[in-house]
Length: 139
Image (cartoon, rainbow, N blue to C red; front, side, top):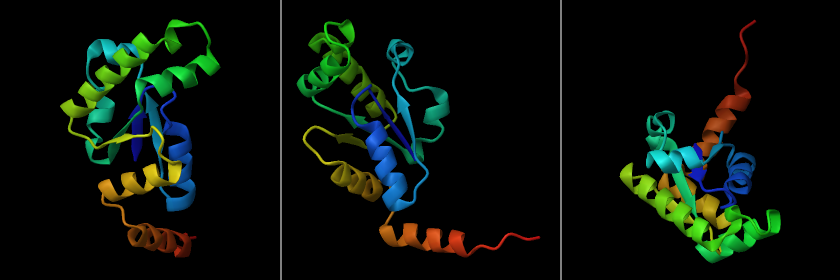
């Protein structure tokens, strides 16, 4: 699966949690200024729409998080955060992917919502992991 979103919205910790606790292969894609300028997700993401989910966060907490990383920069300004989030949401809506707000939500809850929305039940994940772990390589 692929998690897309603006910088600092929780993609990496969510990806790690999904990989470690649900045995999923997860990539994250940080939206870039070039993506915002194009006003659409790159083609190499759109072709994987069935396994793509968007993450978002409220502008004020995002600005606060970014300010800790790069204080007094455009990157952390509320205006830039609002603009990026608005453009990201428009891009997600354009390809009709599920979007999850990470504001005040635990990584565990976000991960569970992502798994449910993409139709990945824990039983199915466990079953594929068991099958994989019992697979013997031909010699």
